[in-house]
Image (cartoon, rainbow, N blue to C red):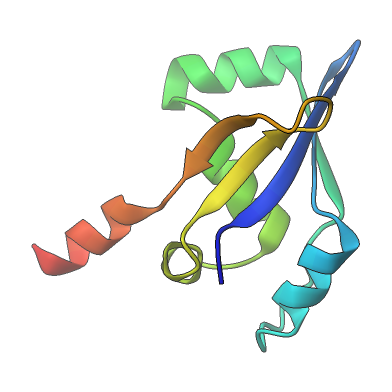
Length: 104
């Protein structure tokens, strides 16, 4: 399977990350007992605070939104974050750092 896609949109208060119904069905079909979320909202203030302390929110959003482990997301080729308005890739989370830790 190619990477999972998360649609990203904004509103006056923050950022909305969303999985479409086909992606959620695909995740449930993987045998995962975790139910993926439909969408996740992150306020601009929270996003800025998080980025200053921990870096970009994308990897963390992917984990919360899908309910899958970093190993599973890495095996799927990662998660592609797409701008919902223009279909351009905003970010690609590959989760390869996790693979490197296992090798070392």
